[in-house]
Image (cartoon, rainbow, N blue to C red; front, side):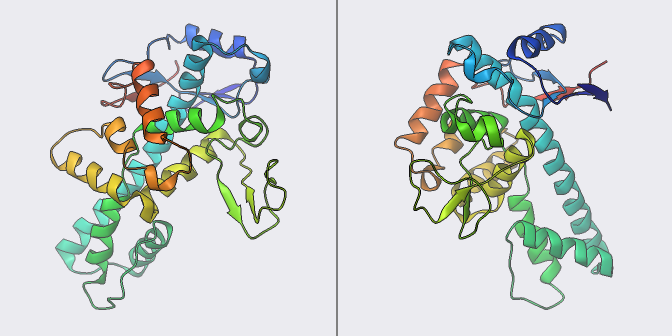
Length: 273
């Protein structure tokens, strides 16, 4: 592990070592509004995670591992949103963007699957407004709880060996991991370099894919009213993207059982001294 830029980056650790780190940096309660969580970023789940007996305390450790990573991903998303807001402000003032700024805008449009056939001088504002509906924070508890459900609290082979927290699929190619229960499947499960990378790609999917349109509308309404996104409410709008039975019910139960209903209210990361 190493410290850099106010963060502790952990390449490899046992469960006991991770729990000791959380105690050292006072990361015990994650259920309070306006919580501050230390910048402890694990690349992977603990090396002995599969051997640790399943328990409520183990589940809480899983939540503590993923929450800072989800907040770190959100920081990157907010930086992108701020850049898009600046581009919009510039365009509204000058009615033009530089060639480099236009390229930045088009890159964001491709990344977030925003399209407009309009090639007139109004094209930038059309793309910018559409992007601002998509490029926004994803409630961190949604990222954590769905990962818990998809990986059975980190016990899955995909999570332990390939850092895949959401059963992310790669279709019609040789890359990735074959599904063990379906050797004839035409898809593979993706392989990531870190847990953060898996979370970041899931957040991008939530922000870009058509299946999450209703979630983004609810988030936009909340933002316009000054309310942070409420994860259980948004989770009910994720049904079309999961083949798990009663996924919304599972998410809602997990939120309630682990007292996560206030966690998304203005959470912050704090530097490691």
